[in-house]
Image (cartoon, rainbow, N blue to C red; front, side, top):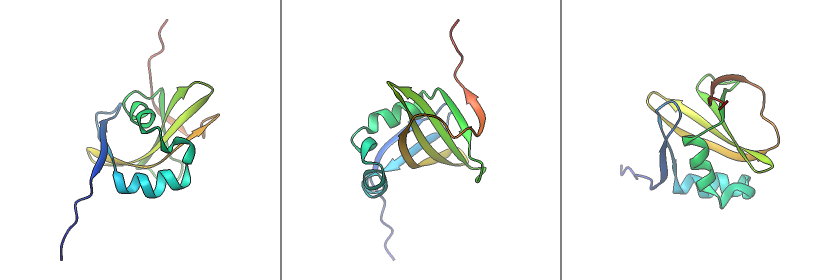
Length: 111
């Protein structure tokens, strides 16, 4: 049996120090198909992972986290599954407000 190694589109260190990745194949099949509004803007997704405004824990899965970053009139939300020191992007989309889960990390506000 031959194991196929998927091409990584990007890998970014998140606010917790975990390496979060997404493969080119997954991005094309899931993100582009489901959320066309964010599909051409993977740089915003990378920026959200690296420099989120806040991160919420999923209400249904303790290993899933929602990263949010304000961008103009909306929020970018990147949904990530954590696995030990790594993680992977499940999906990403634009929204007007967060889901209101438990906030587990928040950027320090400047005074």
